[in-house]
Image (cartoon, rainbow over all chains, first blue to last red; front, side, top):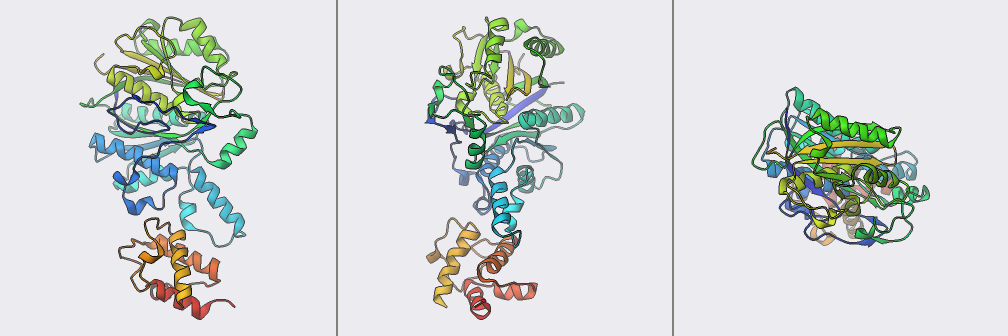
Length: 355
Length: 85
């Protein structure tokens, strides 16, 4: 069965809210973290609802609403989100509220907005959608788990499923994870992340939504041909073996892969894995990366999928994504490989809708 | 009374995230609910929390709440009559 990605919605540290534009003017901010560029939320979200929303809910709702508007789908069969940390800012506010008020009278809004499934619920409320509604919180495999659920639902009987991945940056999260030496100490220009590998990556955030369907539409970007989620694979050989198995399951061979999208993040230790894969297996492939544009976060693979779907839909690879200068072929098959914190690995195979 | 009203307007804007309003935009006698301010039942709960935290006043009866939360002035009058010394 073919599973089509029919519409995209994306809010990120890049200009990604206009689907007609594909990274033509990449943002090259110099900072210690990459925060989302806030779109004009009031343009597509109701003003009355906005006042209670945290930033994550706002850019998540914007991204989801963008999908709904562009797809013109009114009746969803499922809303599935993946988030590593959920509505972290509101959780922090609520916990501070509990502490500051000696567990006494607490604000209902902060509590309501602090749960991980707030966004899925808000989308359902907005649409009066009482169908399947699920939120996956599986660390670095949260988005992939949501996507896998969506794929399985479409393979059963569902159609028109909204799947998204989202996470936000907060000052507290940054302060804690900096002590764990996850991030660079000094500010860095986004586009220099891979040319200047050091210890630590750059934290990011974003929300990417995808309208999946078993039916192709005039706006279809790509077909999903396979997905694998791996936890701490033993070796490079294991990862490559899983890639080969995924590609063979789709009736293809490694030679048919035109582009490999890699989730390297600029951390010199974590990127050794990608460097070895490239050295041993992907010397002749067109390689791209994306975390210099969105930063590292638990659901950054959703941004990676957005780049892969855009490449296939537009038959174009923006220079800012390219890691090497192979000749740009006609794009038919794209493999996305992401690794989060050397633990959660995922493989995703996409195909051109006309292939 | 006017002092409580002005303080209350600032507190309401902050507590209810009425980001499009300034204190001068809110008339002390205008209706808070089913009005241009767009307040709803969750906001009523937020106002209950505000009164208890800032003024030590508990609103336990729903019927009392409907009268008290009619306008900024009615809330200010309730605060004035019941504020803990």
